[in-house]
Length: 223
Image (cartoon, rainbow, N blue to C red; front, side, top):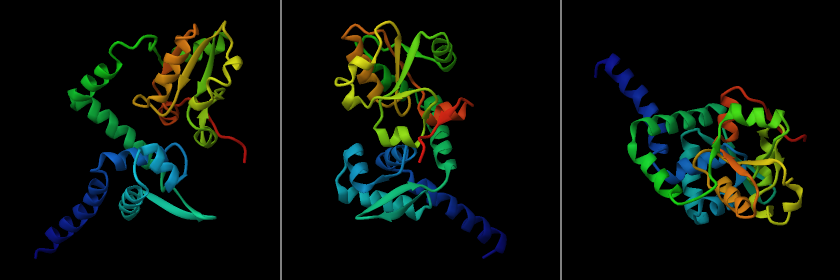
């Protein structure tokens, strides 16, 4: 075989390993979850609605492609993203899909149809509201994700704790909720629940990675 051709074939074969690892919707979801914070298999299985066996198989494929790594922590193996570029790539993939695939917008509109109180807030508008004292930002993701990185000034109120901590939310301010990004439903549920109880609630479609990618400040919990 021609050495030039052999070189090209071998290089593109390695590139294809990444593509093969990403060809599963569930593996993309697992990567998105790991872009929020390191997690063990049990947590990933629960959050992605997978069995433990299937979660482990998907993680081994991602590990084989060099996208995630696992480290023993007590009785559990904790997985994490190997490089921040993986999360940047996921955002770029999402943006490309949104531009090229009209079905994405149809699915989104069908999901949101008939839901009230889901007016989104953009980044600049959110900052203006916070600086003027008109808004409080809440992060409704699980606390481990908040600790791994959150929008500066946000308060951690996981969706599962929202009802119990309602007294912490001032009636006189806009409550802006965010979670993992534009297709995360945690903030949608939070805004619907708060709106039904008379709060002026809004959602930020950005996740932490989107926020940071656009040059806005992100804070990590001490320790």
